[in-house]
Image (cartoon, rainbow, N blue to C red; front, side):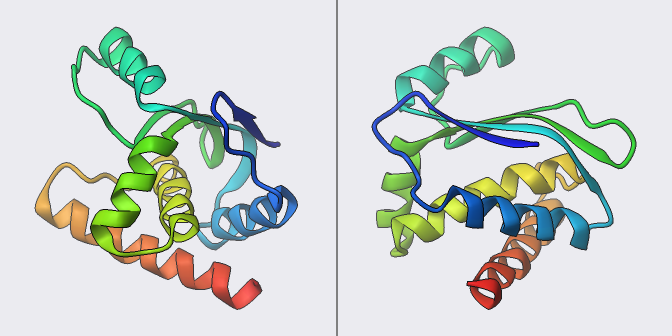
Length: 139
């Protein structure tokens, strides 16, 4: 089950469609859906999580806590809408597009993709782009 929680002023009107897309991405990676929670919040909310659980004192757009069991994806994905908005401006993309990119970035982490090295980051970006195209095909 995919759940959306809002700790900020944003709320998606098309949750059902987003969930179908996320499910299709999960299936395309030969994984199954467990319980995945998306928590949309602001910078300060996510900074506190970053400090408390990861000992990082920096702002970030996403933190994922992966509880995947085998091929069943489970976990919590925290997304800062403040960072998403700033990134959309910086990368000259629509806010909705950047939000989808970050959503799928978290799912790809649960699928086993990393982004610590240049090679891993390159593969992650390629996978994000591939999965974003799936959204546009279905939409």
